[in-house]
Amino acid sequence: MIGNFFGSLLAALAPGQPAQAQPAAVNYGLERNWICLPGRKDTCSTPIATTALNANGYGSTGKSSVAEKPAVDCFYVYPTVSADQGVNSDLKPSEEIGATQSQFARFSSVCRTFVPIYRQMTLGAVGVAMAGGDVRKAGELAYSDVANAWRTYLTQHNKGRPFVLIGHSQGSLLIQELIKREIEGKPVAKQLVRAIIPGFNVFVPQGKLVGGTFKSTPLCSRSGQTGCVMTWTSYREGSQPPESAMFGWAPPGMTVACTNPANPGSTKWEPLDGYWNTKSSYPVLGGPIAWSSEGAAPTAYVRTEGLVEARCVNDGRRGYLSLRTVKSAGSKRTDRIPGEVGVRGLFLPGWGMHLADLSAGLGDLVREIGELASRSKAASRPAH
Image (cartoon, rainbow, N blue to C red; front, side, top):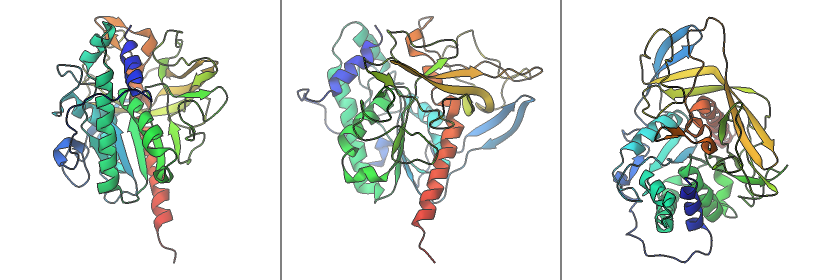
């Protein structure tokens, strides 16, 4: 039933839907309608204190950095987090800021950061859809805001620079639509470095890298590749998407695309570089996590290199990223991670490890974009 939420949003965004009257457009020329913009103090430019967590327990604590003259831009659309009343959020971010900090702010070390505030479909819209309500108008409004912000970014900020698109869940779906409507087949497509859009199904014909969701934008199949999409939906090892799954199950002839965040194109187990919010209020399967036997973490975020491994699995219509933790004798750090979606005391098997999609390999993603940005910078330097 809860899958009806995104099903309704998909229906709202389907081509050929009749236009409906919408509230006034947001003016994205105003700084107040962005959570993050380059050159100012905001969520993305504020250093994040983080403690290393390894087998010996808590290590050193450091802070994230902000690049001085990054060669690429990063445009982020956050997931469904708003607890505002009604089916669309307002333009006064609260939970949206927390999501931006957890999932995206670290990219400021490798790119200029852009995060529009948009009137997303709220958590309350889930209940409306589950009850059979029509949320198509709410879906249209969410997309129209993101598209409006994108056009403003292109006209006022981009100036021909390469860009990265990043999203999760509802944000990833909206970026899918942005790619299809505003980027594919247009000159701006040449500026796309990567789209990183986990947490929502991207369909491709079985055994193919393009087709299905996108007409001409392929999956990333190797490190260093540009103009491609990285996407996955996560499940804990030993679990797989059931046929009724919200994520990880495709229509006949298709599969759900999967790219390993640590090594695009790999189908082997790859160690991940992850960042975890130790103060998260989301329920955890098995109860709260004690991150180290030494006690509570000294900072809200910990970095865990090698605690988690991931492998892409494509089996017919199923496609997903399998996650497992690495256990080691005598280790002081936990061998547990959060990720399942809990609603009223129940965890939803068809959503897998949805809440871990970005956390599990966030360090790898920042590293990869940093490497691509360095290549872009080197390519733009005049020859001597």
